[in-house]
Every structure is written in structure tokens, then in C-alpha cells.
Length: 113
Ligand code: 5GP
Ligand code: ZN
Image (cartoon, rainbow, N blue to C red; front, top):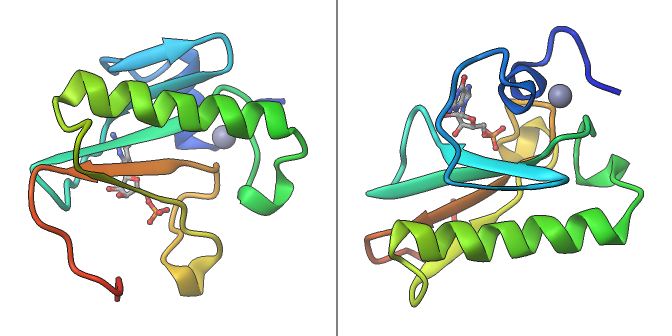
């Protein structure tokens, strides 16, 4: 069920015009509005789940990871990229519709902050 006040539901439904990098039956990906690396995209399910903890389908999670891979390929970073899922505000989650960050185009630090 889409959530009326969810920005990522609006993007997935095409209510906010956004160029998709990759898309399939159950996900879309697009550039992050505030990139933290030269390449920074988000992969989201079309269906609304607040966070990783609410996703009840391993198939959807698998497809989101496939989407991350496809997005990295399309961005030209397939040999070096990081996929991040922030879960909960203390972990940095600000948008409560699960999303996978796909980051690349620069050397990454470890551990993340
Ligand atoms: P979080 O902090 O929840 O893990 O990540 C949310 C991400 O969504 C942030 O990197 C933020 O820049 C991005 N974001 C928030 N609103 C929008 C939007 O309207 N469009 C796009 N493309 N990205 C957004
Ligand atoms: Zn949503």
C-alpha cells in the first residue's frame, strides 16, 4: 500500500517526475538529491515498507540487491561500489521508505561513521 505522505512512494508512482536509472516490476532506482559521492543512487521497492525490518519478502530484498547491481553497472561503477541500508534514525535513516544507497566514484573509508 502506498503511503500518501511518503516522498519515495510519490517518486515510485511517477507523481514526482524523476529519471529512473534502473527499474523492474518491484523496484526503481534514481539519483540521490544530495549526493555523498560522485555516483550516489537509491534503489527503492515500489511497495511501501518503513525500513528493512518491515520487509516481509526475501524475494523483494533479493530483487532490490539485483537493482543495486544493475544501478552500479548503469552508473559505470560496477567494480567498486558500496551498498548501504540505514535502519532507524540513530543509524542515519531520514526517509522511512526502505532504500538501498549505491555509492561509488571515490575511495571509501572504513568503518563508516
Ligand atoms: P537515509 O538518510 O534515510 O538513509 O537516506 C535518505 C536519502 O534520500 C538521502 O541521501 C537524501 O539525500 C535522499 N532524498 C531525500 N529526499 C529526496 C528526494 O526528494 N529525491 C531524491 N532523489 N533523493 C532524496
Ligand atoms: Zn513509501
